[in-house]
Length: 95
Image (tube, rainbow, N blue to C red):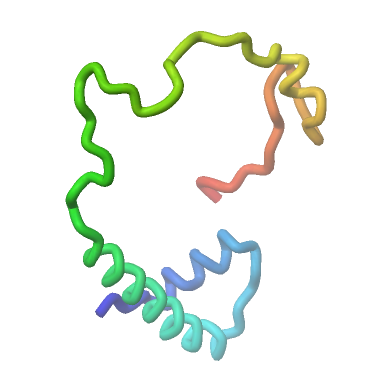
């Protein structure tokens, strides 16, 4: 069984932008370990057989064709914040 450390739980809490008390850390250590263990077990049960067999010359849907796309201005039109042609989002990695 996978067992998360208290430091790992603290890192997860920081990513979720929440603060846990020491008593909550122990509780979540157990609960998150069980959730990860359960999902890990379920993933290992998935068969390795592909769901679709790819065969040359057989179409599986729409053709792969170049089509017009949005301009930068159109893509950024509804963005909450943009700068110099890019979306501006809060930093979430490397904190």
